[in-house]
Length: 462
Image 1 (cartoon, rainbow, N blue to C red):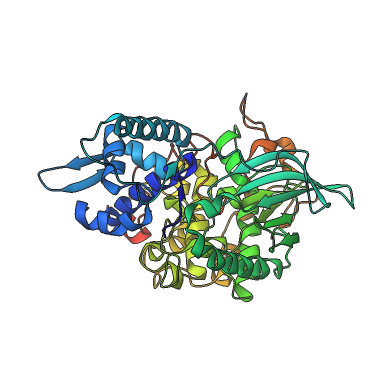
Image 2: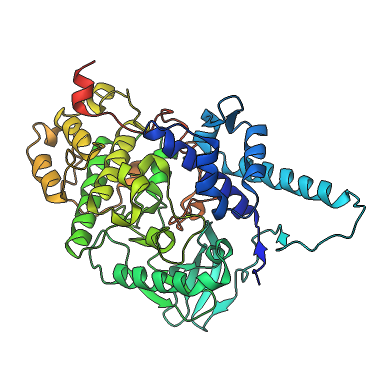
């Protein structure tokens, strides 16, 4: 008997994005976006018929369906949604559209006996967890929700025995994406990645304090980073000092270097899981969490909710996500580095960083270029290679901030002015393994419509 499928507003949002992302992935490699090909990939992975999703997305302006060629094309509005923008608007539109569609179906009279549907679909608001103020295992008091996504909800919590504030990530929403029989595999994978992350000990890797993997809804407790994420800095800071961008690049490089030495790859790096602690240092979170929901030959055959943001995904993640390794992390950090320096995502014909900011040493252009090559054979293969080239750059001391060391002893964000009305750190999502329903609107809107950076060689041929 088929299990009931709970279709929450988050499920509608993520499944719609899943379809759009698959169409974009086909375009990325110059393939024709055949309606039938996309349908075959997506149909078994979504809770509502694929044709209904296409109708909604076309009606709402997120894609174009060419009936003469039977092809699908994502619009600029759709690209913005895939890359994290306008999620609230998409969710509201999807809920209204499908509620209306279901009411319309329910009002039709049938001349014969009706058959019970194979599964029931329910639209629910996902505010179904324990409310703030309640306590888990007599140890953790939830104080406030600070972020949620397809995987779960992150709370600012109080560790009762020690009376200290921590971040508590409760894995609840993830299970709504999968059938009940897939739960054991999800829990097994989640256990594996949490244990692998917990073994990583480095000043720039978010430490895991505690975990309960036996509960119906497992949770993970980690350090609370009160300054939000690098996404907040990119989106809301009036200016970002070059020295701070370089410091955060170096801190993240050292975090990845430590993880890669332990044979742990992140596989989903983006600004949202580069958290900023009380001293203004970056701490990378969620190592390997995208592995929990990667589709492979195992029992996981539904929505790839952990697919991350397309802008930061290396080409190999579209082809063979289970085979991707450290070089995918290098690619993602290269894109983030460009975004920190320029406040824009790089496109195929984007200028190099030093062309946007002449104060930057030109050597940074070469590092960005070699971090983001499409082909792994042309890309940096290790973090050590990047650090070696970084140390050879002329004029680096002219742009580094006064705190030359990688770790900051005093919070450099005290000198940063944020835009009026900017989101406060306590409002920033910490749960970033999956696409965030709470991602800042327009976070990627400044980027080019083409997300794949061109190589330095191509640039010189222009």
